[in-house]
Length: 613
Image (tube, rainbow, N blue to C red):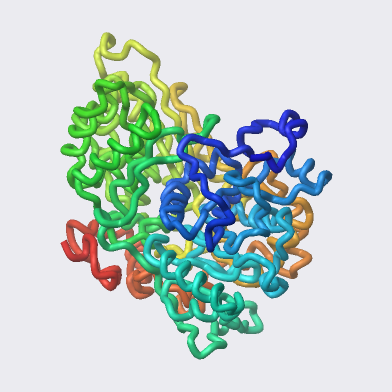
């Protein structure tokens, strides 16, 4: 196989391994011997995309079909892009180094709003018309999925199909129909129209949006008799029976998460009011321990990785965690294969759990406290107390850990100066727990990192109606939190406030925001989530050119009766439930988790999971 990029160019770019494929477990097929070619595109660099569990699952799910070849493409870094433009090298896939334009489907996973300009840039580099209305029979069908697809409107003008929900449900039926239509000589337009038969698929061309004089949405109206007024996401109900790859792609270079990824369950029981994933991925559906042990055995054997990452939204909520950890350690500890967890809830945390998870090698522990004060934790329904946090950290310190990371959020609804100062108080108490240990039990210096992100109201959360702070207000709050921290053992960091402000626009934007994204891309914006390539001024020029403002989309409180850009999408959770949760937030009242008591959010409509246990 010849590289799309000549060797003399690869030798001049950073990390050439990003572009050559040839990894262990890469699927090899004859592209001329299949009926369907599907390019799975990740709109960020290789090392970010290769750490995405969704990519690994769908790559092997689609490639298990003999009639389909799924290949991967990633956004080229700036150095290679320059050569691609100069040498007229079109965007290509890793498996066969083929131009994206040669594929039947070009699919993007949308994991983060600040990747939207990269979607446009990859289409441009591929020679595919950016605007859906400009594409012909010769162009691929552009399909987008992932968490950001639940508000599809900012990208609606560029995309043919949005897939809403879990890919294992519909892709087989979609590809079977495509193959039939292709063999029958039917057009892509006829195929797209046929997709209106199914829930879970949103085709923007079949919906018109009208606006009030003040710029708010009047209505989203279907313009085709088969187009559904509301499109409902699709979910897997049996996690033991659903496809999961027996192997993973093993990169030839370091990536962000270079390890076996074991998915314990989907969904979350907690209902933190700021967390979009906790609502759009409902209900919780678990795998059994025998299934997980079997999958771990296969993944470790075929990858050679020395770490198993136990992945879910709140991993320590897995009901059989102790049994699973015992089984994994019994099988793998002799081979020095360790277990790792993402950030933990301190209330579901125990010394026994810590010791089990990191028997082989200790790393830092990460806890999501989210807010400094108990009042604000109750507002966001975090359902942990200050005592839980202190006790959890003390247990960690007694267990031999001396590095702790704490996550906080700035600008949460109802936040006051006292809430921000409480971040300093809480970190001070955590440091105190460490120094309360006998000196012989703390041989190493303590490091506490308090990391703060800026609150971004997201669709399908109780805070979807709330105003976001301006970037200037975020800066003020960050400085107030920083000043509250007195201990030299605590390091405080916070996220780029202008990036968070832009994320707030793109998260709750409507169709008109497409002009802003296009305007920013035209001005050279891409890799907006990378600090050195984030150009706020260019985005502001794009807003001005489109006649739109950040304030309208990010910093404005919405009334409950306003039509939101995503109201024609259903994730199963009812609008009434979200409104009730917001009212409870304003009263600082908490809601129990799904296993303590059902709150009738609406997710029972999917017919499985925790709702029926």
